[in-house]
Image 1 (tube, helix red, strand yellow):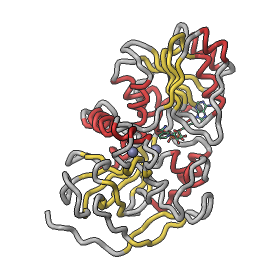
Image 2 (image 1 turned 90 degrees about the horizontal axis):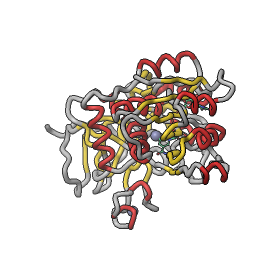
Image 3 (image 1 turned 30 degrees about the horizontal axis):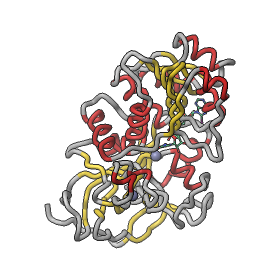
Image 4 (image 1 turned 120 degrees about the vertical axis):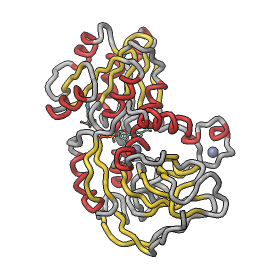
Length: 351
Ligand code: 8ID
Ligand code: ZN
Ligand code: ZN
């Protein structure tokens, strides 16, 4: 394929300060560094992390001004001189981990997301809320030709993250996994990966619409936290003794604490959601006597990416998406802040 014409400017959503105006406007198209590919982003998922980044919720500074977004799916339109393994026209994905040093101990062990020099899309590196974005050629995700780019977008963060989190829970087929925040972006994919792995899925989230989505995606037992008085007791009853594993994808400190109480003896609580300033409180007596494990899980590596995409390609996982224009990103953030997103919103960068 001949090199496509690349414009000088493009549409993007950009902010100058954390919590400041989200401006939809024309900005220059970036030039790829020698190690980078240039991707014409067609669609980008909107992850709750993008909202945290904009608000400045975490003890890690964002680049400013910043173009957010890290679930970008598009087409390779350019590349730097050192790039190997990509050609113009390939489908490529922008992930949270844009690039890493590849020489430190964590990179050597394939824990690239834990690299002290990790470069993060939509955080320290302009991300996918623009029509053209750059990505390190080593870390960019390979997306098979013919894939629906809107539907694959959420796999690039939400899918990879929950797939890795489920692996971190060390569960066996037939065991119970509880998903706290089951019907948001990460949760709605987690239900399906868990089901595909042969696990029994209990979901906790709030509202009728989420209860409906939970059943549609194959979940077995739903608890509405806005209506249930004692979530801990109900999980223990429904799972006959507690969930063998818990995936915490809600943005709630209280929900994380509760998960340490309804986790079964010798089970694993996986921390994924990142409520600003939160602490994981676990009663020491309960923790010891039940010998529970509490582990953190942070996106996934290149193998997790390939495997998570493979579940999607085989039709085992579908993205429950709603597609809207990039220009209405502020409205998506507003809904997300209120916990009103059912499944995942994906922005179309052409609108
Ligand atoms: O690698 C990682 N660890 C990683 C990767 C990607 C995202 C971590 N995250 C983090 C995000 O930064 C965010 O903090 O995971 C969290 C969830 O991201 P998301 O799935 O993109 O958010 P969402 O779509 O808003 O879904 C959150 C769900 O939690 C429910 C909400 O109703 C919503 O459906 N929820 C809340 I808020 N409080 C709850 C509670 N107390 C709850 N569900 C049950 N109990
Ligand atoms: Zn994300
Ligand atoms: Zn490194």
